[in-house]
Image 1 (cartoon, rainbow, N blue to C red):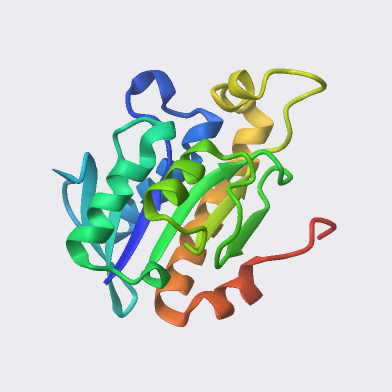
Image 2: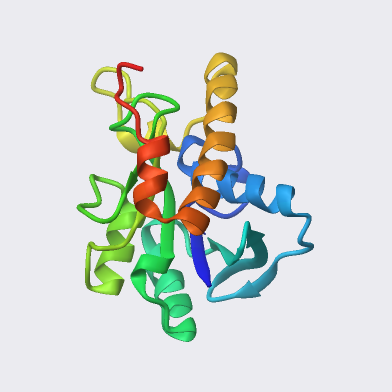
Length: 190
């Protein structure tokens, strides 16, 4: 089984914000699967979906971004998952808008939800898919930026990226991270 965790904040107030791109990718996967309704579990919402030939469990933590590790840790422990079978999907303001980056591990890079997951799991060797949301303008507050919404043009770009990220999740689950990285990680000059 593969566990795919989308990071975001619960509630209508945060829907459509840059920080909720991880939730948006899982919403896209759920919509494609036609798998039914989410259930409560692991301090989040869960949905069992097919990811090509693999069983996938989608997890939307409802703990708020900075406490995402609690939800992820519970799911990993319950299913006794190898961390290679877990994928964290999150926003990244260090990447240009719409760029995707799959990695097998590494630092949180300033993403506080990912930092909490690393802290809870006790390792930074957990695969992640970062979706670029662009950098905060000038010396603006990063928190205000990530909790803001995309403008109309940005929304069109992020919609394409969310669809591509959903494809990348399926490729990761079915073909492995190396294949998915080769297919979806492109230079920022593309």
